[in-house]
Image (cartoon, rainbow, N blue to C red; front, top):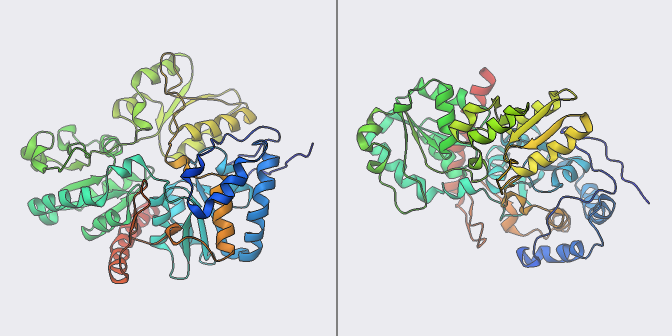
Length: 439
């Protein structure tokens, strides 16, 4: 039988011959009409071994690479479902966290066609820093983020207006990377910045030195963990009502207007459904059995406090790469990430388990369903359609685009509006970059 030899990429991951790809097939009606022929061919394959899947992909990826040459850049995020990260690296692409992805267009001006297997806000972040001659494409516009779904601009902007009316120039907005360009522009307009899970403490500390109040959007738990890490009095950290239950009035925040007036940090109330499953009891279970526990800071404060360490996807992955044979790591983050970490750990003599894989808990290994909407047919179809000049415009990502992940309806700004948004959003991202580089 033919074997597949795939040298490890930057992540250290490699496809294993004869081991089926951990990829859940999507129903055919989940694909855009232009992508259905690629999906039908993929679904008809006899198996999901790397040999078979790479034979299918080679027909589309290699001609596209030959056509575009060095102008093509393939990207993926660590959280993508199944083996897509390994496939992207196999074809010379890069896998990174949201901060590193956002910088790719700026770091590689020679790349004119950027194809991302990740979620929409990540592709838009790349587009915000891209030059005019760089085009950013997403393999599946339906790939989204549950946290970002609870922080759409039509939800956040009316609340921000209430806060700005009350506090004026005393309010500064920090927009987590997991937001649309429209909210990154809000941060820019208020003199604020973007942040990621890795640099949130540095960005928040920078912001608090300049303003009396920070509105942190969107993740309540990352904001609360960051404030705790900086030693901010919990009485000065106030959460707004949970979004998705109707219009939000600022007077309905925890403790009302009096609490808001005393607050240093105001938290938007959305959250990641994957990371909020972790509990202190899970942490103690693994620690009691001799495991080191590492967790993502989108998790609840009490779970983060109980863990041995916390940090971004890069932090978690690097912890695995630095682990010694015989080490045992329980990792609290997205399930596909942990599955890939477990596979790599086995090659290095390091045991890795999912933090929620404890007795009596049914959601162990929970992965992000919306991020898992990127799969081999989407990669094959996107590259082939681009090569043929037939790529659907809905897959092109411009700054300011808002896509409904269910209906595929898109709201696109006109050129003047987009230019204004880019100015504000880029200023917020550049402030983040400056903070990171200075620290």
